[in-house]
Amino acid sequence: MSDNIYLPKMGRIIDVNSEVEGARAIKTFRVEFVNGDGFDHECGQCAMLSVFGKGESMISIASSPLIKEYKQFSIMRVGRVTTAIHDMEIGDVIGVRGPYGNNFPVEDWKGKNLIFIGGGCGLAPIWPIIQTAVLQRKDFKDITVFYGGRSSRDIMYAKELEKLRGDAEVHLSIDSEEEGWNEFCGFVPTNVMDKSPSPKNAIAITCGPPIMIKFVIQNLKGAGFEDTQIYTTIENKMKCGIGKCGRCNVGKDYVCTKGPVYSWADLKELPQEY
Image (cartoon, rainbow, N blue to C red; front, side, top):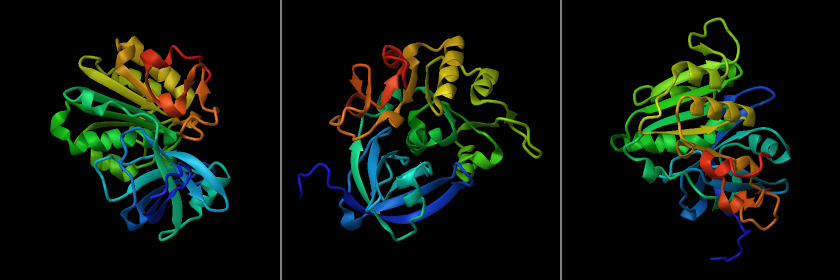
């Protein structure tokens, strides 16, 4: 086995699902390691995906650690590397190295109510915790999921969210009214405020656009949540994954090594530049 930390393992794409079409297209890829030469991960960690000849990009691992058959990645097409990944098909091989970053302390949350709040592609980094909580359903109390997109066409994991209703309370939203949409119309933070989740014995986990996170935290605080009850991830700040390039720093922290998972109690002490 090579000790080269930059040498990726080979991963073969075994499934591709188009989540969202258009300019902000999102696809979900399931990848198995060639010859079983893979790695285990924890909820909240990331992997570096590489397309040979195009480059590499840090992507959240969007599958539960309890699922051993594959790693899942839900990727928005935003640049050269992500466009190249979107062009790949079942059977194609990519490079995968990791896992990188810290993790959500899921073990510490057993016996608690879990409240997940996601927007856009921000559902992907928290999806592993949702999957884990459902697979270990008896270990957790109530599970509530808030998720929203710009329109009904921007709702990712649509089928999975419908299936999830058997194990969790699911509140979907879109920004503006649409014919045929019977759930909440408005921004995700407003939906949270409308439903007013209780902070009693609860942990809230949120990920999405920074402006959404800002108002979600504001509304959770207004509902009585303590800073230590609120968690988020700033995986979008991660660069090389190992804290060598220095481009992931937020104040004193190298997000690649200290993060990307933070409680609000810790994150609010850093410069508000994320």
